[in-house]
Image 1: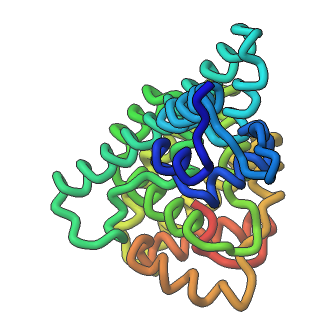
Image 2: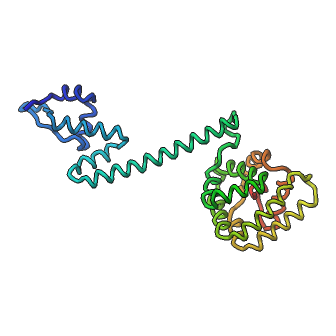
Length: 276
């Protein structure tokens, strides 16, 4: 029976002595026969094993999975499960890559020169869309384009930094409420269309106070909605000041005043930029 020394085995398999020793250590490659002097001898069995390891590594399997598969070569079902698991992982990775390519394409189409152009939807906005449904979000964007654009930017600012509170959870709860209460959602959407004109008002326009009072009454008429909104604490110092600077380009002075009045009427004390 023809046998190879470890140096010849390493050369033939295109690997390294360190790798072969590691495979032996973790049990991926069984210990070979040895000469009387203690030198390792490798034959066709070990070569076949190394060939299988190479093939499985090329599929993206890690050494643990490979060891599990090769340890159950007499059980095709086990090997099939490992391959199916790998396939699911690769499909997930493929979806992630496709989403990244789509985002890059969107930036190229928009000719965005910087990553802060708000071309990319934030994770919380994506999660909201998954809860409400793409059609519902699209209808909101069409009915209230200015408000939707503001929400995109505000969600991005909230997601990109750690403000000390779980805003994503609150936004998710808010989306879930509207999904389960379509009537209330439609009422809120109709009111949001009215709020769209706030940005055109002067900061001291008395209509802002009227709108803020109406908004507070609307929220109070929906106890569950009020509970969701009130459990979210406003952004506190030392972050409040820098947050206000970040949203200054998103919210007009009139809108900031509206948010502050709305918080007062709801009994909330804190950052006027965080109520959208």
